[in-house]
Length: 180
Image (cartoon, rainbow, N blue to C red; front, side):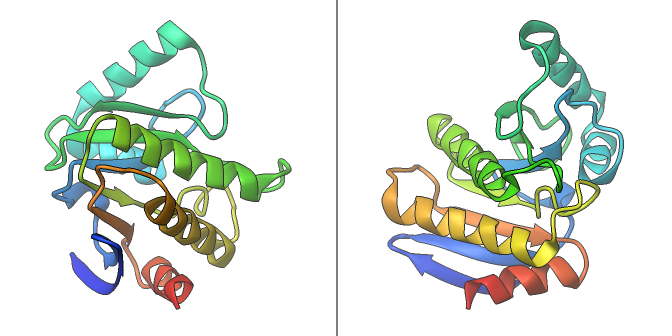
C-alpha cells in the first residue's frame, strides 16, 4: 500500500492509495457490487476469494430478506478473514442506463452515511462503477472524490480517514488528478 497524495479536510484526511483493497487495514472496505450481491468477478470476486465464503453467505441472507438492491444502495457485512472489520457493498450505476452521475454520487453517499451510522473511523473506496459497469474512469474518480470531500466538509461523521484506492497505475493517478 502506497499513499500517493493526501488532503486534509478539517480534522479528517482523504488519501489516494495504490494497493490491494483486500489487504487494507481499515474499519471497512467498499465493494462495488451488483444488485444481487453475487460477488463473482472484479473487486467483488477478489474480496470474497480473500475474505472467505462468509461474505457471500451474509450477502445472500440480505437478498433473501430484502430482495435485490437498487442502484445507489449500500449494505454492510462481515469482512471474514480480511484485515478490515467490515465490507460495505454498494451498487453503482451501469454506464448508459441514464442519470449515472447522480446515481454514482448517491452510491458513495450511501456508503459514507452507513459508515457514519456504524461509527466507523476509516474506510477504503475503490473506483465504483469504473470497471465492468463501464463508467468513464476520469469522470467517475472525480465524482467519487468530490462526493467524499463535500461529505467530510458538510456532514457530522465519525470518519477520520477515507482512502481512495486502485490496484494499478491508472485509477490512483486519476484520483490524485481529481484532488488538484
